[in-house]
Length: 251
Image (cartoon, rainbow, N blue to C red; front, side, top):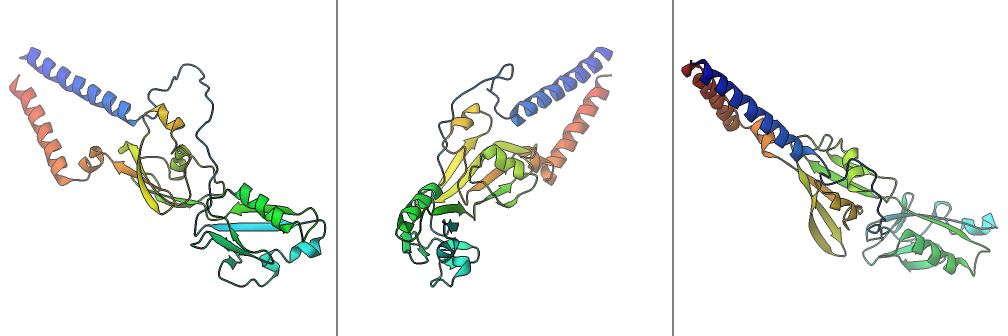
């Protein structure tokens, strides 16, 4: 009888170790990444953010003559239309903004660098050596699901990767599946993009760098529901009772 008791205990211990190791493997990121030595690779999947309708731009204009350039900055002038505010220039549904003196300007699908260059060209007849600063003000992402701190995050930089975004939200919970869904709206379309955090291929994915207004959904695994669902709790209790009974019966 002692033999069967020891055997039962041994099998239970082995089962627990197997479950623990399996759970650890499922929880780790970038499982196929070489952890023994340094790996280098070129960055080929980054492209600057392009401006879309409803984006808000901060545009500052200066020149060798501050008095002349002041008229082109909406903060010091009353600009007609709804596209200029104290917070910046809002891109309308036609992809345009209204600038003082210059008037309507198409900015949709341009980078901030391209916007800066085009404004500088338009300012040449009015200002000597104009300097333009253009920046996207409303870059934000939403992270929902099984993370430490879900919410809406306003970000200063427009270069934001998926791991950086997860760090803003307190990382995935241990119970979260290591696969994400990115929901992206761009050019009148909505995409639902699956992303696997277990593979280093993520670093070369065209979706590694996030876009303005992206939504990241982290799905909870079955273990999350097991800790909350009464049915799973009753099953766990029943299995424990069966295991204890089996040990006593083998004595």
